[in-house]
Length: 424
Image (cartoon, rainbow, N blue to C red; front, side, top):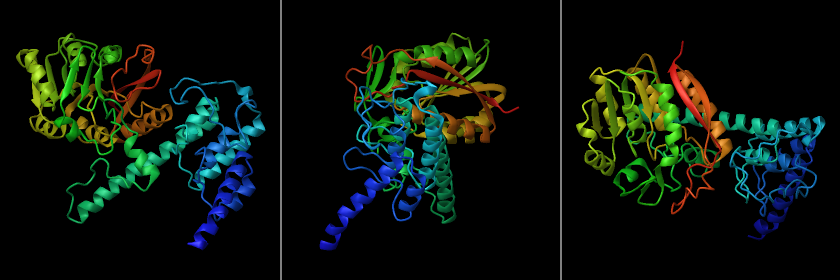
């Protein structure tokens, strides 16, 4: 015990030396220190990692930076997509190059792209707030590489489980190693509010839990039993534009996964589809659909159950669609990827289009940007081209949109609308 106690001051000294070298962009010294030290150490007070320190040192001279490890005194939370300062005079070229070399070295040595400090900022959030575009893009690319790798490792793990003859439970959400911060963060980040489009800020909260929960239907929202936002009326403009892009003419065949408040299904109906299929799993929403007459509409087919169970049956029946939309709740990115990799290929007619509610990582700008690139790469690998349209999101904070809710599922000022079609 005495040996351990004596070692702690040395460990703290090493941490401060690493942080100081990172803040000074002293690459040669960092290489020496990282031979026996970690690129992911954190300051006990500020929570700064070497990545934070290297980026914070590039901030304005009047910012509260001390040795590059105390730059988090700021008014807003730094990850709302707001402060994109593009002023190239923020720092000289030689300092940009020094910072870039430092950040790249740290990432090569295992620094974690999405570690947060005491102000809940990742290094990328800090770069964004300080207007350091080139460093921000480096952090986004690091996030993309990490997430792609974790996704591939997850696939290999499933294959290994299958080879062992025990495939049950393989690929279940939340199965990441909680001791691995990068992997743990990966399973929590993906999808907000509507998860595959949104995730819920509750450890272990899964789609099965949501389907068992009671729902509170209000005029402008649906809340689950834990006061999480399932869907809200502010999404109407996003849905309108989505439908305009997906359904240019009448008489098309439409498949919608996830009815929710019925916003997009109402808009689809205005396009006079020849066939309109809706997949919904939550008993309370299905009951509300009955009360509202959805089951009685002549061109509507309601499929009760989870899409994982319903989609294979639709495929077996040979039904094809000109338009597909996907908007589920309390599912992670893996669910969305499985849907377009395994089912859209067999359900979408040649020349058809499909989309999804893009809430991937929407509570933090860098996560949104990372997952935008990840999903586009995975879509291309699955055989889809993606076109993006940027929409402005209303001031939800100013409208008190999140009243009586546990947490916002959207914190950004822009929505990236994806429209997907077969490659070629």
